[in-house]
Length: 150
Image (cartoon, rainbow, N blue to C red; front, side, top):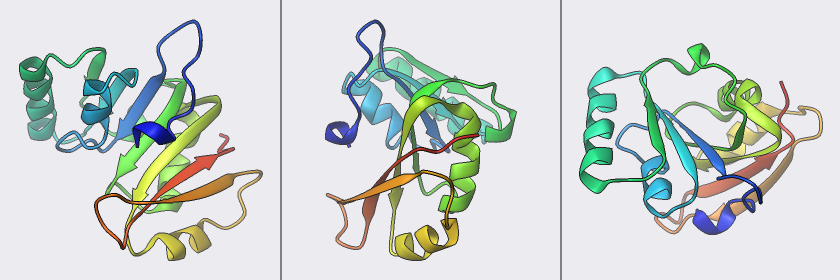
């Protein structure tokens, strides 16, 4: 996924928001790779506690944990939003819209249902979708989506 991220801004760290972080994939991994300032969003307090401990043990830089529901987040102005096994694409687009900075990008890891979810997403303004093969599963893809607006 690191290669699919847009270039970081020249004046600050790239901001990444990982929705439904669970065990930290892909958000915590991206933070460990130095991808930018990462906000992990996880509503389950047990998982959020695990994430905080993983951050402490790994000394992952520039990572925060938001232990709350996605709908309760303030506008984070993210350059990139990631998600894996969090929600259907149409719902993810709705979650992402108020959190993205203008021109922001989404990277969503999807399985066999990717085509059906893209169809269900329908026409949403000027969104762009690029598909990339998953390195972990031949049935999965990474969708890079731009143009999502609130």
